[in-house]
Amino acid sequence: IAEKEEIAAFERAAAKVQIGPLPAHLLFLGDSLTDFQRGYNYVDKLAFWLQRRFGDQVTFRNAGVGGDYISRVLERLNREPTAYRLSMYDSLFQPSPTHVFIFLGHNDSKVSSTSNYTAQAVPPDKFEADYRTVLDVIAAGTKARITLQSASSSVFEICQANADKATAANRTHSLFGKPEELERYNSLTKKIAAETGAAYLDVYEPTRTHPDKRSLFDPNDGVHLTNAGNRFIALRILEHLCGP
Image 1 (cartoon, helix red, strand yellow):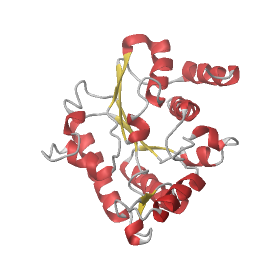
Image 2: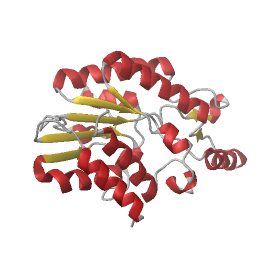
Image 3: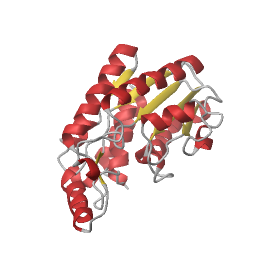
Image 4: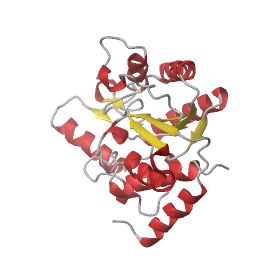
């Protein structure tokens, strides 16, 4: 259930979408923000509005994998036998996508308690190198238009409180959603997009400055999207498809 104003915003955006020659096939790569809540996550909501306008001329594949970071994506694309959940990318480019959206950075940028919260899951230089290689693999296998999405913001107070609880319990843990880390990785993603010709979609600032930010994120972890958060991301992508 959404407010009438939000439904109207979706209707206006859907009417203006410029998706190019039909048929179109949209492929989504990402972490748990893409993988979880299937049936009503942002991919499903986007699919509803595009198929409402274009019918079965627009198809979708959600290949998000919970826990993913860019290096895992690359391992799976390279069909490495030990890659985590390798089967999620089986026949990934069949049918060949016309659009690829990549929504990562949340796990890449998390920092570990064992390093006093200074070591990221994927160091920045490796993040950049692997991301560029991922784009090379996609470009070699498809003619898709590629959009790199920034990581979304977080409710960092919740992330910090969870880390503090783990510290008090003497548990090794990760700290998610640290603003300076998210912004560092988003800057890298934007740079990569600019230098490779991919599009860049900023969902960090719109989620960071949202007037009811907490409504967008899971109250238990401050990172995953609520139903309202999934609607928010879906609308940003729909507006992105309207062109400049």
